[in-house]
Length: 134
Image (cartoon, rainbow, N blue to C red; front, side, top):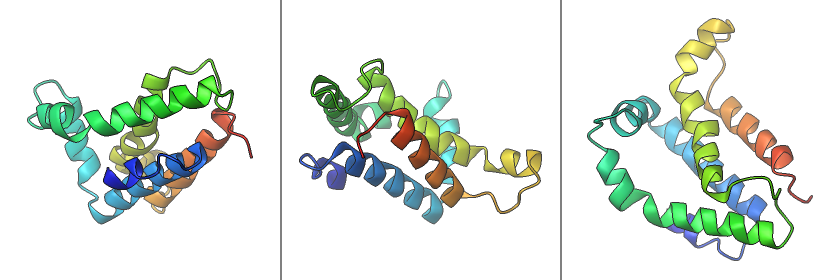
């Protein structure tokens, strides 16, 4: 969290790569975390939801949404995107695929599918889907 906030003057590409890289590194170190996220944060009645909403995520969510809005106003980010939902998209591109890795491995008969693949895929989608300048 603090390290992303320290990137206030960095390019949006740098901020996005840092977010995805750090979240994927966290999952690599703690492979149980995505399932915990689904069960205890996303699911109604999850014991960790209040902690996330009140203490862990407000500052970084506000920073990221403001940064996305700033980039849109400067003409450097697709204007059709909602800055608030981009944070949701970042989580959706990382934690949700990580939580479903056992399913994707079985569906695609790919035991080698892992967090590095999710990271590369998320970065490719962000780079091209957000129409970021080269």
